[in-house]
Length: 140
Image (tube, rainbow, N blue to C red; front, side, top):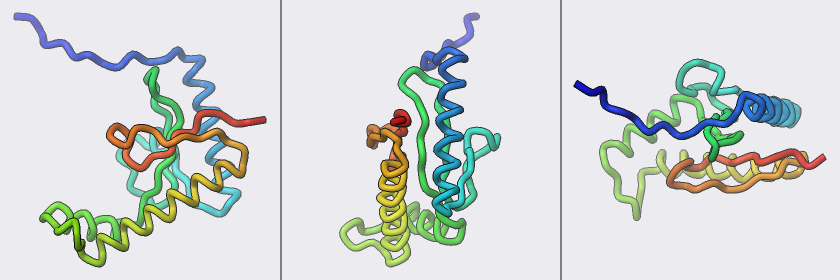
């Protein structure tokens, strides 16, 4: 019997991973210097659950360094629980609106802080990366 095969995305070389890790650490330093809580989610060994900026490296060829924002569990879980139950998208509950507003404001702040610090950023495909920010490089 043949084992089923999985098509895994091709990964980059160890040298590119090293470059991405250095860029991710630079991103973390700049966000911390701006006063924001930061976690390297890819190094934590589990799902990101701490509030603040989640910086992580994806090893795939199409990957790179990504930044996302996470709220405190109380706000996140309350909004996600209601969302999972089904909501009226035209008139979502207040907690869902508030959660979305916080995420939107922090996304805008992260984009502006990173650009001001000298990083080249882009908005990745929303279908594949949600609200994450793709940090392409540091403009020296």
